[in-house]
Length: 297
Image 1 (cartoon, rainbow, N blue to C red):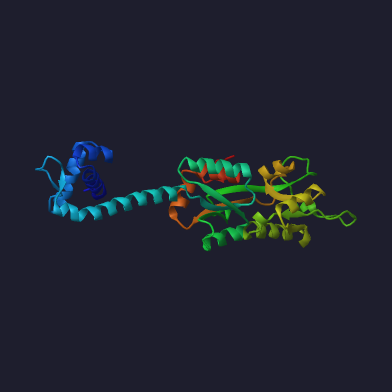
Image 2 (cartoon, helix red, strand yellow):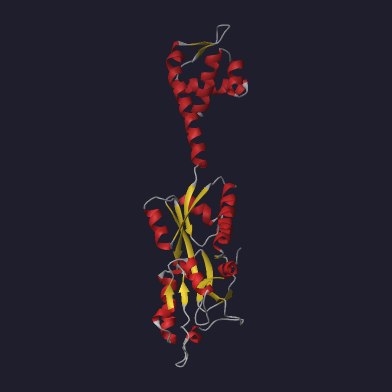
């Protein structure tokens, strides 16, 4: 039995004094109101109305239960309002600082079609994990190894001086003994300062004989890009970022590199919706290749 619906019909009929008017006030057909009240009477074991009189009157039993029925209806209405407000409350999502404002707006627009409103917090990889742990955000796109990722972003090196097509060999950055110009460097932006990207690149650095300082972590994305803009240095980045800076992008010849992303959330529903219904939209926001192997964006 629909206890709330039955109590709503009971309260409406008692306040109006007729089944016709009461059912209209409750927004239901009169036969439905009558059936609900009859079901409530059977459930409670006593008649609520004296139907022998010309006007519908409450029985003593009905008068005793009316205040509690009103309370139940008010509580149900309040619950529905609270649920509506909760659905409209933004879900705070920690995202990479590399996501553009346009990409975030498009992800938010897609989420709204599923009654999910997003509020973004840009942060570096380690901070995104901490934000979920401290409940400052409800979900985060976190950095994971590419072979464990739900979305991946291929990485390469880019700058203003590499004009050839094809991969860049890092051993080509070794300076000759007679060369006096500054040694060229590869700058790692903070988003890629994670072991599964940074450490692999450092191992290649050592294997091809580059100096330690020739592969370095930039203080920020803009700082790394500035170094590449003002010199022959290279920035480790995605192809999409290279276009943004006007760089020419090349994969690294010695090894494939990629950012990997997964999602973690305090509530499973938030994570499930982002990785299923919004999967392609998240991929576009990241400039990523999703788990199907298809490139997005």
